[in-house]
Length: 411
Image 1 (cartoon, rainbow, N blue to C red):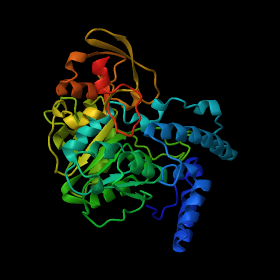
Image 2: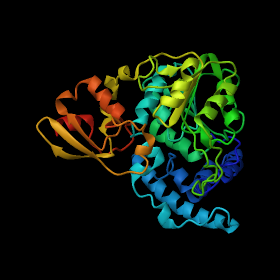
Image 3: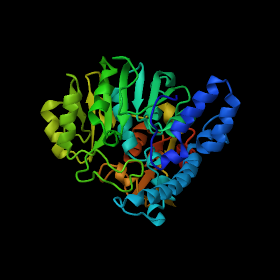
Image 4: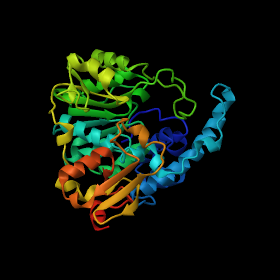
């Protein structure tokens, strides 16, 4: 897992001192002193140790993230204060970084908003069986939706943060392979090694956009495809003082810029854009319909597919399956405010990140909603609730405190 990398930088480097971990690993493993290395990890990087078999363990993903978030907020305040000596970014006070709600955590919220349903739809229509590369894996949202579709051992997950990789291994895909790697550099794989490659919500955070996309395409076979999910444009936001790990962002200035870069990096392969709003006959739009996607889509994000190996699965037909039964929960963003004989009345809680991860369609993550309990055995109805964001498909290790599907039917 420990590849040559300069470390993640910023406040998070305090919690996972990656370069120091590398040096300690090289030194102690060479002399076969594994026990000393474990002690060193416990003392120097306790948040890393808690994700390893020899550290104090957490039972669920939610419990770990809540603890990690508290530690990170303190580290951010300290880091921003130390950086303010350059008198460029401006000072930040601790009250601006209050972040107490678990649902507001970016990684956690990715499992519980309707964008998860769209990502699942893209994955199921575009990712074929075979070796799969998950780039900038984060906390494993792609790996989660691939579970049951491909073997976990076929997935290689890459990220610049060691803790992210350990989280995916512990809570999402314990059978996968993991590499900590600076994704501005070339990928350590031969051409066409993977059947598919996928990344989600990360390209604008990689300063070397072109290198990242070209490398993803290079390591993907000609009869496979590269899925690039949720790319955004943020004109004028090159400097973000609260980006505590990278103040300067290489943001796209427009959606058209995103498309131009994709075409340049596709290496002659076809480029398709995701457009699930039923304006087109197909959800993957090719050349003649690119302009319609750019001008008519209500989604602030763009998702692209490079390659032709995909299946046109209408969003309305992307049904959940029986294996999802135990994973379905009421979205933690909702609370039940009233229960009738056959109806559950829901109201959405206020949250920072939840709505920002949703296309601004009225049907998605509505403020108020009713569930018909008599239809909770209808998989078409459940799929609709999943697409709205009312129900979530969650990992078994997620630790959701919201009611499960079975509990909802008994309320």
